[in-house]
Image (cartoon, rainbow over all chains, first blue to last red; front, top):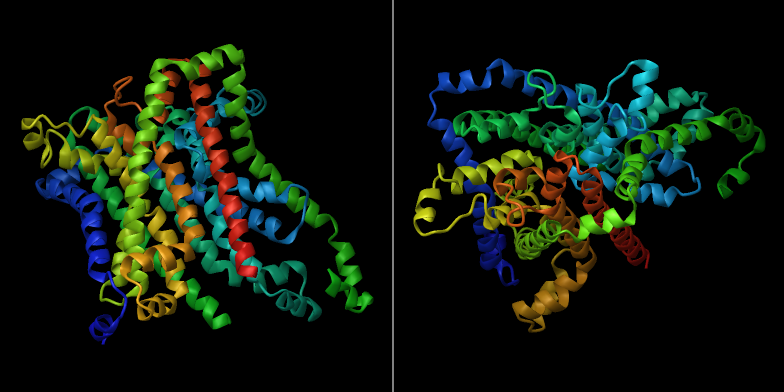
Length: 280
Length: 286
């Protein structure tokens, strides 16, 4: 049936278009990515495990995944709040704020990195009072990494939740409240379940982006081995020492995580589409 | 708002009055969060750039190495954006206008570069074209240098911006269906007419949207380009890499001056993006 449909199409250009697509996809994405896998296959399993479980590598992977998880959680909470405020409350300057939410998408990561470092460094605008009043060092510690990852993940939850919130039927909330539900109950029982798929998708997208992030982090991290060295930096460090096998081993672990996350995000989006359709 | 007035006052009013402070508090918290993580960093870029005055700023921007970096950044974007544009139109045409097995796998593969760490994106090109890589030695015999040279930078830029235009066009062209194109073919249009007169005019805003975002990322990419660049001043430094070098040499004013150029690019990107979105909203209303 699928083939029959294609051969019946009156539109021209299928072979050319698909040919260009597959050729370009192979040359730019698939062949280079498979190079990483082939490079790993030249290693024995034991050597691969030894590379990946070296204490310094493990520490960097733990840091990248842990900090990304916390940053995504922060963004899930505050991203939901920002989306809610942007959709529900007209306040002066709302359109400007709405447009600026995408800043982390548009601002190059290196620029974000040095700007955040300037603010949170021990002599910075916020770094200095935080250090003097609370003895809290932000830049050049894992906390600084968290700040950078929160910055770059900020738009994801807002942008996935916002459209769902806009389509939310106010009648449902009014019905819940006229049946005696409090604001907290309405939010927890009526609004949150509807937003859950979008919220989780945003969380997963923010997490996936943060795990691999490099540019905004390295300026603020301090990059101390075992303490504030992220996994992407570990790859660069190994490359600079011409340890291609070691660098590729870490990269393959990160690639596996990316693929797993991509799969999870696709499933989540499929779920939220079904959710939206069953709603309608 | 009008609907509220129609409701019986006794039901709506007390509840509304009881939570009157909540919206203000929520807006306050949201703005505080955004200030801390968005507005303050943006402001800091321009503040630090001008801290030592316009003279230092102008000198940093007019520096020969800075200009070389700007030229290379523009070159990489000037190659990457059109390449991904042609690919995006071709991919969207095949996926949206035809049925074939494996389509959803293809869509997932197109999205792949978004979920790969920028550093890994650079590394895979080193493994293919580096001196230790598959084609590196053969290319070196012919005097072609890809890694630690401009071609590697262009390739890495193409990789990280690969999905931008395609993923903008695919859902748009799927939503528009095939009827208009099929009618045009029955009226005798050839493939070229179809593309220029029917399909592209229909998706022009989505296309522009994708190009704007693709360009912003192409000019600002750091991690992937950093791996393949080799950091040769005046030769293989893009603007983001030039910023890193200045920053690491404690030339903060210069680093922030160059960073402010990219921050302006980001703001222009956001303005254009908002403008395109408002155009789309207006056209869908009509």
